[in-house]
Image 1 (cartoon, rainbow over the protein chains, first blue to last red):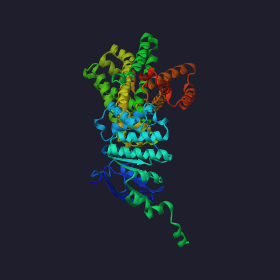
Image 2: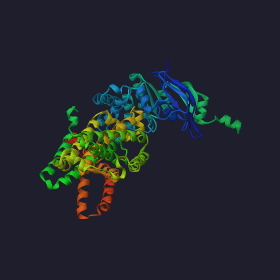
Image 3: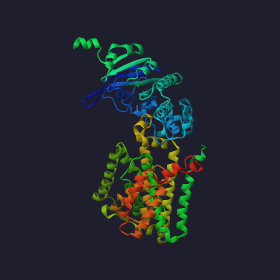
Image 4: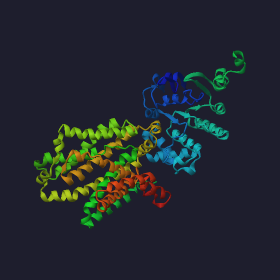
Length: 251
Length: 331
């Protein structure tokens, strides 16, 4: 049984088809990447999956439940976590409070009181290694720290599917490697499916994902294991353009 | 933090209100000033529960005070000869709470689906619309209002009525203020407070975190509105013993509430007290020193303060005491 199933999901903004009839599945505990150049529709796809806005066409199932018309908060209760491209921690709340909010309202939220949520927050603060910033407002952290807080906040929701929007954008190679191994680590320890969205850092994709979906102009271009996807001529073409000999032949 | 410790911030609030009340009792000549200050503090405290906690500005807030006033007025006006004695005041408060709750439910269910400026505009519309409905459809005597001083006198007797409207009405205002402060702290220390904090800072992120933002906004809205209704029943109905729609829905009270919350610090527990006192005292003395010009002078001062100190007095104080022993008392 697939954890998440999208069937012919389409989203239009006026005349622009941002996501064009996407069909794919995500399995439990899977580590995959959605890849595509700028404007390919990756973020829109994420927003459709976790319900930031509804799809115009198509259906989305989560654990065999049709969630197509569910609002974002209900999908979060079912077990969908999300981080944003530009981290959006609750700026004047402390790091601990930020993460506790995830625990309080996430998939196990109904049974978790404020005190328990704070304890859970401490556990995740330990995991992301920000113990010394526990009581500081999250707005004052560095961008990388903010990203970690966001990941911890999403993990505290106890999701079964975690959507990570450009987790590695703007990082230096050392931080990227650190983040890749961190993401693999949380997949292994928390046992959740992680979909990471990556625009162009192929170094991260290769080290991170077991499977890759490549989007191009809103549509699904390739859905293959990572190695095959990265060497697929169609993917190379999307990123690098036509190989030189073809240009010669055409020119 | 231990459980009891989390509620320590209520101590300075209670001390502040006790001091204000004590000042009024010790100096009977200043009772009117104290009553006015208590009204402003309560107005801020009740409004803060919605505006401060959610970041939404309700320009129609006075409508809840107005409808609460009508609740008390109707109870006294129609039940004065039923031999209920002081019980009509109790019924009045119950009606005030019911009316304001129902109105806030109706307004909230629609308006709270709107964001930012759209919400503000919608609430102005509701306030004005409701006033014209009462005047135009001649509900509750329409524009003639309800004058019920004679009814109150017949129901409870002359002596009781005097004490009720010159003393107990104001004491009841204090009670509403404390109720509002306690509720604010209970909210802050429970899930609802964290949900409101999250949606105030980033509503879209809050939704993705599993927070049903509409539900929590409505909770804050109804609580705040019901407190406003009780405030109206005490501070306007019992004190003045008349009500006209033109007063009950006068938008400048909403503006005063906004100023008080911003001066004190939106979303803080102590803020409305500090804001209410600053505003009330300043207005009182400006009216003596420069009668007629007080608002002209007041406006630029308020704009300056809000631009320079957007966090408000208590907001700044809260930052200052962070990491000191005072931290657990000031929020």
